[in-house]
Image (tube, rainbow, N blue to C red):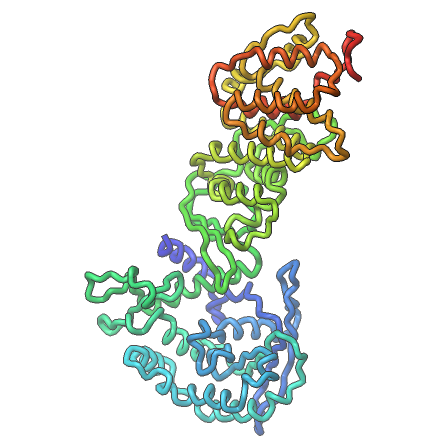
Length: 576
C-alpha cells in the first residue's frame, strides 16, 4: 500500500513543484525549530551578518512568524540541511547540519564544552576530504556517483566559511537556552540542494552493506519505515542472493524520504489523520472526520523520535453520516449535561461517547502506550485499552467488527464504576446513552422483549396483596430498586455505593438475592411497614427467573431510577 500512496504523493508533489523550489509542496508548511537563525553574507574579507531571525513556535496554533523577508529562504534551506539521524551525522552527533553552507548546534552545547574547535575542524575536514568518511566500498561508490553529478567540493569556500566560524561562533550574542543556533551562509538555494543531496543520497539507505548496483544503478534498503539490522535478522530473505526484503533505487528512495518529510510537516501542524485517494491527500487533525464520502487509504500519524505511522489501512465507502440515533432520556432526568436529540453523524456520536463514558480520555489515548497513559481511574484506563482499537476503526474508518459486543461490555463496566465511586449523576447519564446505543445496535424490536413498562410495574406495588412479576425484566428492575432503597437507610454522611458492587457484578440471580438479604438484615431495624416495600420485597423473593443470564440493563435501570418505594400513595403507612 505504501507504494501506491507514495505515487499519489508524487503527483501532488510534482504539481506544486516550482522552478526555484522543487520541494515547495513540503517546504511551504515546514516549521523550523525554535532558535536563532543567523544569515551570513559573503564579503571580500569574510562574512557579515545579513539578518537574524528568532523562531519560536506558538504551542497552541503550531505556527511561527513568517513576515521576515528571509523566512522563505530559511524555511527551504533549513529543510534541505538537516542530518538524517544522529548516527549518520557528518562528523559529530552534536552538529545537526548536513552541509558546509550551514551549521546547526544546540546553544547549550556551545557553553558546555561539547562543541570545540577540534569538533569544528573534523566537521569541515569531512567536506574537504569526503572519502575519509565514505571509505567503505558501497558508500564510496554512492558518493562518487553524486560527486560526478554535482561536482567536487569548493575547498576555497569551505576554508573561508570554516575560518569565519572558528573566529566568531563562540563570541555570538546568544541566550543561554536549549534552543538552536543555526548559521546559514547566503548562497543560491540550488547550491544548498546539491550539497544536501550529496549527503542524503549517500546516507539514505538503511545500511550500505545491502546496497547493490544493477545495470549501473544503485539500489538499497530504505531507512524510512524499515529497521533492518543485526538485531532483526528475521526481516532478511535468506533464500535470496541479496537478503534485503526490499530494494529501491536512488530516485525511489529519495521520493519516499520526501514523502516521510511531508508527513513530518503534517504532524508538526497536528494533522495526523490522512485520507488518501486518487484525488489527493486530505490531512485532518486527530479529532476530525471527512465530511464527504470516502474510499481510499487511511493513515494515522504520531510524533515520536520521528514521525510514526500508527495505523495504515484501506477504507471502503466511509461516510460521516450514519443511520440516525436518538439519544433518549430513559431515566427522565430533570437535569443532565447530555443534549437529548437525534444524532446524524459519526463525529457527533464519537464526541458524546468520549465525553460521557470515557471522560474525554479516549480521544487522546487511541495509540498511547499503556505505561504512558495518565489516567488514574483504573476502570476507565482498562476499558480504553479494551475498546480503543475497535472504536477507532469504527469512528475513523467505518469498520464495524464486533463493535457492539465490546462497546456494550465497556458501557456496563463504566456505569457500574461510576456507581461504586459515588458518581450517581454521571452513572445516570451514562445509562441513558447506553440504552440509546443498545436500541441503535440491537434494534427496537429486540429491546422491546426485555423492556419493562414502568407504569404497569408501579401499579403492582399498590395492590392490597403482593402480585407477581410478568417477566425477568421486572424482577431485575425491582432488585435494583431494593438495593437503592436499602442504601438510603445508611446513616453515614456519605453513602457508600461500593456496597452495591456484589450485586452489580453478581453472576447469578441467587447471588443477587443473597446480597439483598444481607442488606435487609443490616437495615431492617429502620424499615417502616410500607405497602410498596412489602410488595416489592415479597415479589423478588417469590419470583423464579427463567435463566441465569443477568439482565444488567434492567438491574441498573432499577437502581438508577427514582425509588418508587418513596413515592406517595393514598395509603397511610407510606414513608415520606
